Every structure is written in structure tokens, then in C-alpha cells.
Image (cartoon, rainbow, N blue to C red):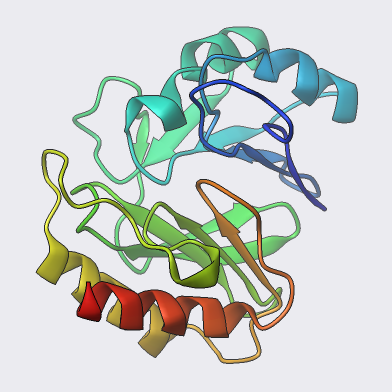
Length: 192
């Protein structure tokens, strides 16, 4: 089961997805709201935190989650102070009841990862793409439009078309025609 713990929060935060199951994982703790209380409201314990990338709105609550649940943090950049374990491109990480393939997708930020499970037909896209053709900013440090476009192309080459769910770093998730939202983001990024 996947739930967005940042739903309804009015603060500068990313979405924060709790993936419950055999290995209960929080994908991006978000920022500036009490995510620990929201985790406790839904599950008894947490097994790990996985970061799509290390922009402040995605990681601001990380220390509080680590303190409360004594969990390790996984992400692309092992040099980052919050990351305990590196996830390389192509590696597998378990979220809930499914294995997800990590896709290194820079362009918005150098340490950006998307997480894809073919079995579950689910993609966690971080800030690479959003629903309705949105795509990640490239005007921040480490941002690069050409690299972002290449990363979206990489995702489309990897993900199967019958994608059931697209969970993004901001805004609503897509549960219908999810693959089409990624295609639309690529078109928009190319033409912007």
C-alpha cells in the first residue's frame, strides 16, 4: 500500500510516500511538517528511508525520522551527510512488497533517482516528471535541461507501457494512463 503522508500539508514540502508491506519504507520524508506522527498513525514501525534526491524540501524531515525510528537512509550520493547507503543505477531496492529498480536520472539534480517496479507497475519519479506534462526545474544548481530530457528518455526506455501508478515529488499521483504522463513531460521538456 502506498500513501502520501504530505497530503493536505500547507508547507514547503515534497510529497512523502509511505510504502507499507514486507519492508516498510518512506520515499522522501518531506519538510516542515510532522511526518513522524503521520507514520505512527499508519504503521507501527519503519524499516528504511529512500531519497529520490537531496533538495531541502525532500529531506528536511529526515533527521526526525531517523531519530524516531532508528532507520538507515538510502540514496544515490554516499557523500551526502544524510545518506548511509548508496543506491547505484540499476540496483534493486525493496519498497513494501516489491523490488524496485533504481534509475539514475540527473538533470534536476545530480543525485536524482527514479524507482521502478515492473511487477507492481509503479514508478516513483521524484522531481523528474510530474502529471499532466510537468517536469523538474533545471534553473537550480546542478540543473541541466539536456540532461533532464535524456533522463526522461531513459525512464521511457525502461518502464513498461502498462504503468499503473506514477508517484511524483509534487502534485497529484497518476493512476490512469500513467505512462502517457511521462511521455507528455518529455514532449513538454523538449519544446519548452
